[in-house]
Length: 156
Ligand code: 5CA
Image (cartoon, rainbow, N blue to C red; front, side, top):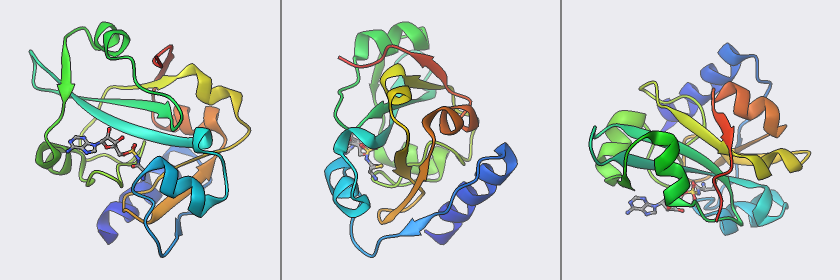
């Protein structure tokens, strides 16, 4: 998915976010795998979770720490509608990313995004960069700004 990685590179540049995308040569599909590859804690991995609005069918992006679970009730309150886990194919078609490589930036569509406040407690976080072995590191505030995400309390 070279095109997906290119989109992340471009989105970062457009947002003034200075990143270096690293291909790890091993799976970073899950937060645990990504942490092992990056040499960071699971908590410093940003999960980019895509949910679908039950009423609108629209996708929403929630950025949470790898050590936290998304609180669906809080997420739904922010989205303004009930949410369900999005279908992997819809995620791929609309964001341009396959599950395990969904990045916080560079989606094909403009996607309403929310970020959990606990991410701001780290000096550096790592996020997926468009493929299942690609990651980038960033200062959380800068990454959240680039994703145009609203900071909120999202974790259980
Ligand atoms: N590359 C890693 C670390 S950055 C990563 O993408 N992690 S993740 O957590 O953001 O992406 C995996 C997430 O995809 C899982 O936590 C899970 O919430 C979601 N997921 C896994 N399988 C499915 C599925 N079949 N349908 C919808 N979402 C899924």
